[in-house]
Image 1: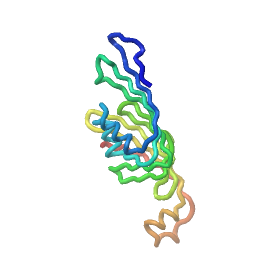
Image 2: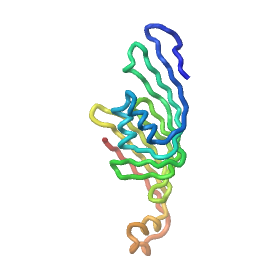
Image 3: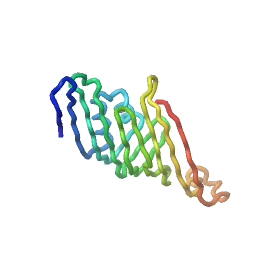
Image 4: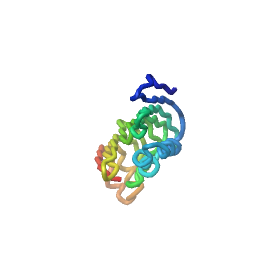
Length: 173
């Protein structure tokens, strides 16, 4: 749906759209927009989403200054995979909402699997003058034997039980 509420000097074209796609197509759309150097780059290279995504998008385009276009919306992940390339982290079966306002990203309580164990992810990202900054929080309650068995099976007889853990990362991309 597209509207221009009033034809005046400060008229704004508003485009509201809902759609279903996959993560790669959403990244490609952002690469074709005025956000190609920030959100487009991040979604195509740094925080790569594969799998189903349903989106709600609002574009607000000032007709007298289209360079000030604002893209606001959210992408709902449903059993999608998310890769944070710089860290080599692969989250599988991610479910939750990624909100964006131009180049600013936010995630609150995305549920996913990391190393075959459940995690909760919170993320905030924004473009600064020198880099795209990500603040990532990850929490989990893992079965220790499952993780040790994958990476150091000879230590499995020394550990048992669950471990609650939390990780906070600040990353410049």
